[in-house]
Length: 95
Image 1: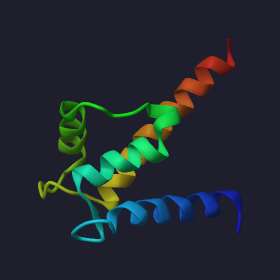
Image 2: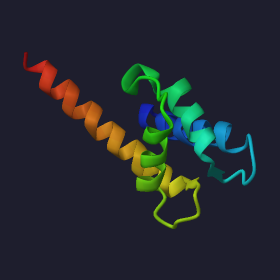
Image 3: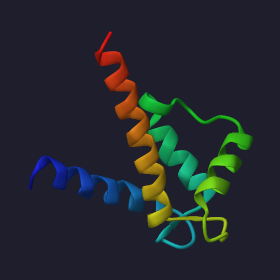
């Protein structure tokens, strides 16, 4: 597989690694999303410690109002995080 294909596969595998821990295996509960961020994205986003931050993040991602994050909603988050990382690296590349 190509680098991009491997990356897409990894995103899917990481989502399911956490979504399968509790309840609906196709959705992330707030606690699963927090664990995913803290374990898989802490180098870019830091650790999410306070509940208000998680509540706000889940509220912004949960477009269908079911208090969980499905794969499409998760991909919105991944897209936003990727754009922010790209902008950061592009900005610091010029320095």
